Amino acid sequence: MGIITTISTWLIPCFIAIVLIVSTWKRVPAYETFVEGGKDGVRMAFSLLPFLVGMIVAISILRSSGALEAFIQLISPFLVKIGVPPDIIPLALVRPISGTAALGMTTELISTHGPDSLVGRLASTMQGSTDTTLYILTVYFGAVGIRKMHYALKVGLLADLVGIIASIVVVTLLFG
Image (cartoon, rainbow, N blue to C red; front, side, top):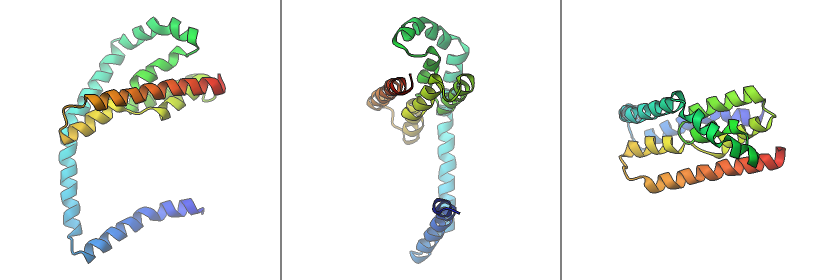
């Protein structure tokens, strides 16, 4: 067994043991504190539910209405001229909204075009170079009650745009 495997096998049990030893030493009721934390976690999950349902509905409407496909058809001639595969645009648009939907699209692109194709490499790089900005803002800002998030939204979407452009440029230069 390698050292990394050994460390990963023992890391969580050792962490739990350290927490229990320190809580006993400081006379903190570990089990009661754990239960209270669990209750807070359940309350937070229920408070986030409306935000998550809203995101899921928005993604479903975007995909099932045909708006996404119409937009791609509209910009395809321009994308082909600059050397960007139009197949990658749905991933670029959905990635800031939903990680699960983006992962599904990445899997579909890789299974259709192959992992070593330009589209497969571009999808993988884009998946790792961007984040689920709208999901993060919805969940985390909603959890703590922040309503004014326009600066965070602008910066997050700008970072996603830079990640998308950088992934297209780097993959095209290296593998195009």
